[in-house]
Amino acid sequence: MTHRLLGADGRPYASRSPGTLGGHRRLRIYGRLDCPSARRWLDRGYYARHRVFFADAATARAAGYRPCRVCRPDGR
Image 1 (spheres, one colour):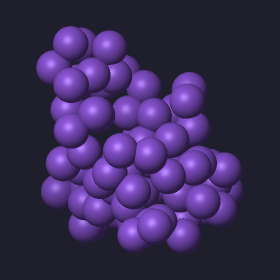
Image 2 (cartoon, rainbow, N blue to C red; image 1 turned 30 degrees about the vertical axis):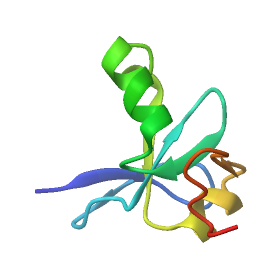
Image 3 (cartoon, rainbow, N blue to C red; image 1 turned 180 degrees about the horizontal axis):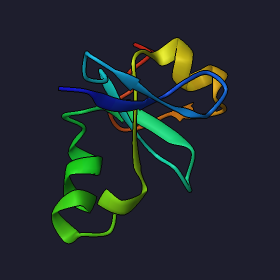
């Protein structure tokens, strides 16, 4: 199975392993896949069409995304 992730250049690529972080394309935010804030938005149906995935936090930051303030995937 292949997964679609975003690279540091912001372009999608196929990966054999799933992403470890999810993000919102319009808001340019990334966070953990189990983030309570993202889960609420997904449950409401607002988030899924703008969702992107990253291999790691460094790639998300390089693509211009900032960490979520709720789940703080960068450990800060």
